[in-house]
Length: 104
Image: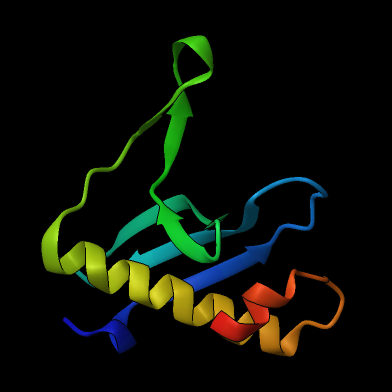
């Protein structure tokens, strides 16, 4: 599988004070179709990272509901960040820090 085979839908988030930049839903063509609903694009310092779907636990902590490792995780992260960058370039209604524009 390569990154071009992965379908990603991005929903930008414009919430003042939040590090969350977008939500992403992913469709993988693996043995039919696998869907990951509720991935997130989060800003941490000067970089972005992709969070897997999660649910709240005790004491304000969140726990991933999907555990991916290795090549498939890297492909999904690459696909999400690429689509996030394309979405930023085509959507002029949401303002983000200049650090995001450099990564797009």
